[in-house]
Image 1: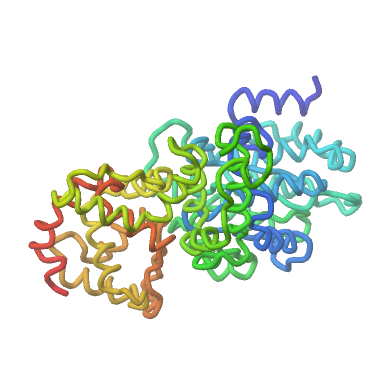
Image 2 (image 1 turned 120 degrees about the horizontal axis):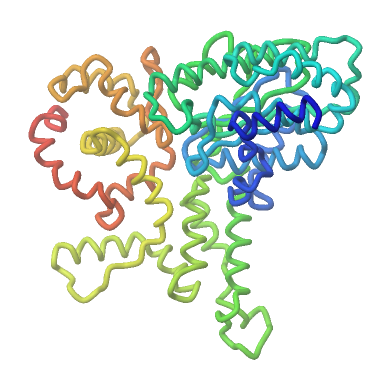
Length: 473
């Protein structure tokens, strides 16, 4: 076994290189990709940046469920097919990757690329021979060592790959299986981001770096720093919310319901193969438009509806009608809770997957009672969605200090919700709070069936209100 193979093999065995983080690994095989015909606009924007963008780092960001991983996996696979993917690194909540393996895993993939090997193979062998301890170094040192591979002016870079794709930067762990403090994780994330920025800022480094993450505070702060802004571009997927334009959600609904129509066992006439009788009644344009309007560019909503219709206990058309009549059924259910209706059974919930995402986020907060109360107050008192976040910070910190909301307490309380909402910086006196999908989030909070564990918090709201939060409005 060659020197380079020995060192790489040893690094893999000692978990310094994470093959499972590579885009085409077994760990990534079940991750969502973009449904055919969807997300074409943002994919085209990103591919155009890879070919022609002035900045050499780009950040794809957005709320939870805006499709970051699906988009970046689709881009990585397309770039791989076209021979322009240099390396990839994917982390997720189900497969959290150790941040310490980021640069070693990239380096491993560069050494495995046959085009690069033909150009810098000898340099790589020499590099590993001189630096067998490279995988133990700091992020900055690893970046410096990696840069040295590309400092020779004689290198022929014909047909070299162009881009390194990194996703789930907010999902990484920083100390293996050990517990980690938020401060320590944030420090390591900053170090890794500085190393990546250093790489792309060097004119000899031949690759662009595409990073995907949610708007975790430490990542936002780094990406909005003046030095980073000058060297990196941003694709904010939140800009596609509120409209179906450019997302392809209508095509997604058409395709999923065509699949449902063709499912065995749902034929109205099992002896006929005519489209008019095979499967459930045609999904008409009005129904599609209603669902597309309600989804408002938010794929978790669309995916929950599609899964409910495909996998429900009733025929697909009945499941679809349950979704379309959801408002009326919610009123029936609330009446049932009040005892005014005793015969109607509780309606089915089409949004089980979506609700699990909301519940997991809200119940991870240190004080979900305060969070739910504050969110509902912001929503009900700021219906026009234009009340600046600055007002709410001032209001809660000045009038509710006894609830732990003084001296930046509101921001600390809401920070864990960066996947569901955006929190403008403290100096911004005009921008409001924005939510991932206002309608579905607050329908969830208002529906006793769907809140799960948050129901126990809702029962405590009157006492919390009595102590002052709502009494000041």
